Image (tube, rainbow, N blue to C red; front, side, top):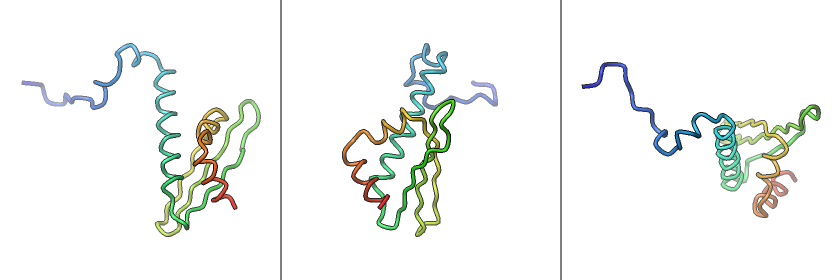
Length: 104
């Protein structure tokens, strides 16, 4: 019998134990999940959805603010991305078309 207060951590079975010790690999995985989530939300957007992408920092690193707003649901998502993550988000043609459509 396990002592009280011990819990199984979910999601650790998928990771390589060596990866858990490398913070850079964890950061890259998280960044990929954020970009994938943004991509899905942009593609599944309703007609009332608005999207704004603005550069907020230039030095020492380019940082962009991505805002998705859905007034019908009183929902707003704000995400900060670096240049590489923004380029990864805009890498596919369907996302670029949807972004241009929403920005107009």
